[in-house]
Image (cartoon, rainbow, N blue to C red; front, top):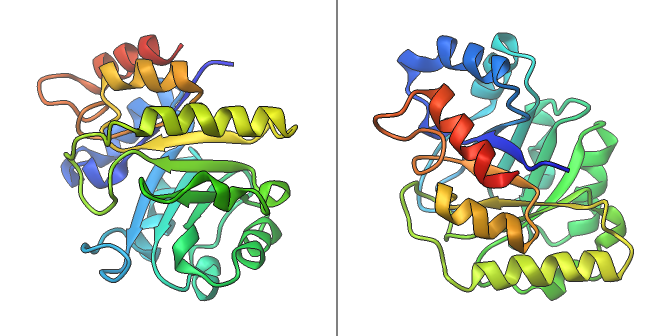
Length: 221
């Protein structure tokens, strides 16, 4: 299966929003990645509930909601997840991971567990039946424009091997952080399925969205 693209909407300039979304639809973009930050789990504050709802009013592209927030148990339904959308929570943000993943699936959305660069893959072992995808952070979350943590590539490979060997090859792997054209190639070879395109992938200075998407597609197919 070809790789899928999820542009990081925190990189989208407001003045480009309407025309940009039209281009994303025309180019077959699979998801829109929404970074939600509370200033506690990560040292930044970003996109919120109204942003997600307003985005749905502008496009039919499914959302890929990345909750970098503490106690997501209480807040998932605020975002009104829709069937076909993804919702990711970080392993460290809740005491009851399985319960939170179940609550995501109860909305009809797909459940994703996010792992920071230093979070080991072993935390997946007891929740594999509860997952639709794994989000492997290839930078420490909070800000755009960071460099990829080098050992992330091996982590992607080992995650794919774990999923396949245990019969969960239907669980997708998403990668987020410095997913440049060059890095996207090696991430794809390592086993990634969904690619969050930010300032080094989709929102590249000097390139139109059509140009960056075409080049990105070539890197992940």
